[in-house]
Image 1 (cartoon, rainbow, N blue to C red):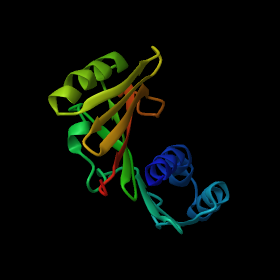
Image 2: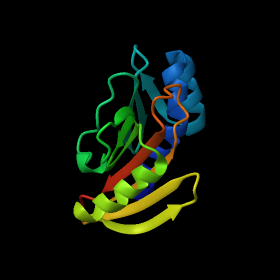
Image 3: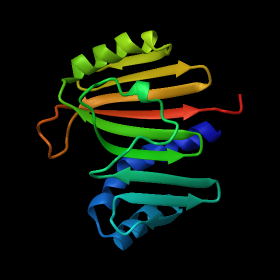
Image 4: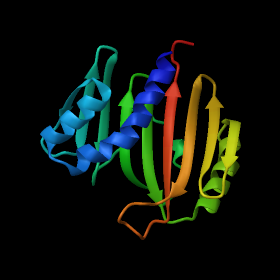
Length: 171
């Protein structure tokens, strides 16, 4: 149950967090609070958000100085030109989104090549042409990797990669 809550919060953040990044702090706090029912605090520079609930807290970072979440396996960022744009942590889960100059097919092929080499097991693969997804696992950890077209203003990057990572440390 905790894993599904962490994944749900991470997915919700991927949708709602840009509101907080581009809007005034108080407006963004109210928008996220109305959608989640959680208490939301946004720092003064608008690049970091903390959402607090009775189940714990989620931290989100966007903007110019995004770092990988603590405990996030760096091996999952397989593209050498990765430009980190979003990250979040919540309980045993975290997410990271990055841009790459490679096209979707090249990124997908690189993940398919690397995951086995790195000791990850491919659980599911989806390639719809316009978007791609991998579900992988390694021990008690799992990740969902979504690969799609870059829709940001930075047109020098072709592809967006989003990774949701969870680790059940109680197993």
